[in-house]
Picture 1 (cartoon, helix red, strand yellow):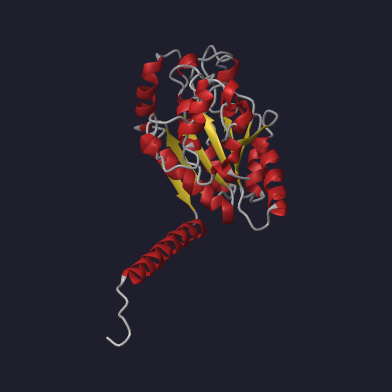
Picture 2 (picture 1 turned 60 degrees about the vertical axis):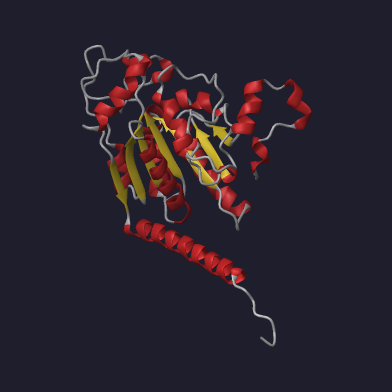
Length: 306
């Protein structure tokens, strides 16, 4: 696979909408654009189907802009709001049945290892709380039990946003929602703790209140999943439509929760930490060797005989 998948076929350029052309020319894939420049370039089509103020869309933009190797990444999604955004990307992706995304990703990762034994292919699951913690919890957990080398990302808006705002296992206890008119009767599922006990090498709980934090944790998760084992990222993505808040207030909601029960959490095993350190050391060594070569090439070579 290569970044050619992001390019428009030249035979279709004259009929493509301008926003598609802009996405190709100004997108982040294959460029040096950084997360800090987000908003100055395109990573999704302007008229994507997400609601105004949707923090799932914000998290999604941060994630796809942070992929270490987009040309060798395959996203596996599931039914939900997030699945609506996959069609707006020039990336390999699979839309699985509701809840079986981790099973599909497991088989895909194994097949890619056989097909490309000498090349790393990153398989990343991106799904909502309903697909991850309710309907697909069994397949999510068993992919972790088996030690599959995949990264799982949960967009946690604490309800079933795509079907009208019903309660999910991730809804807060006492939350008044559709199908919970008197308030939810049980506590929020502590999926991050399940991930740790199930053997995930890296687990992070993050929030759209801190986009840079999401990017850093996501990159760690992908790198660790390549060699060490399964990784899990849980992102708080408030839904203004179903929470009945102004789109402009969703950032405030994320910030308030970040200071409270949805504060940043990170778990990393000793093996995963050692692996990240080895990568950093290898990068430093390569940089020093490159610098040494450049310095030696720059030195003046004396002529024979003085």
